[in-house]
Amino acid sequence: MVLLVGLLLLLALTLAGPVRQWLEGRAELARLAAGSTAYDQRIADLEAELARQSDPDWTARQARERLAYVLPGDRLVVVVDGEVAEGDAGTLPEAPDTTPRPWYEELLGSVAEADG
Image 1: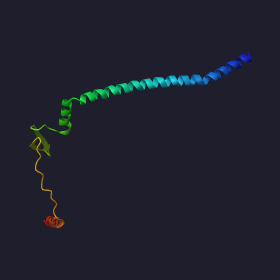
Image 2: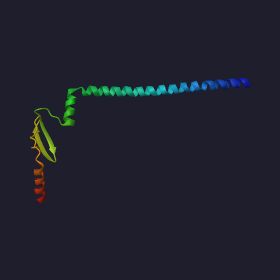
Image 3: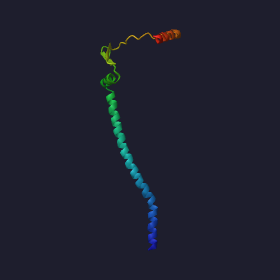
Image 4: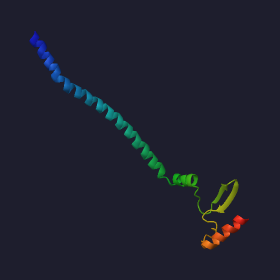
């Protein structure tokens, strides 16, 4: 009888490791299957977004809304500090003269401004 109990105990100890590994493998397989489903959903979402972004109308609408782009001939109205600044699309306002003045003119201008 003791021999039978000893053999059963030896058999249980021998099988404990492989059974534990098998159970862990099954759990990992289930976890990976769930992750695969999440990746499949992400792929479907990205493909739908790519299809949407391939549409020229969607691209033009986004450029107008996000970047304030306009087509040539359209009228652009921008509110700056509560004042309306208008201009034709495709044209640029004249830039102020940005040629650098010599340092001594800058100094004299600064002194004259400080004197009031």
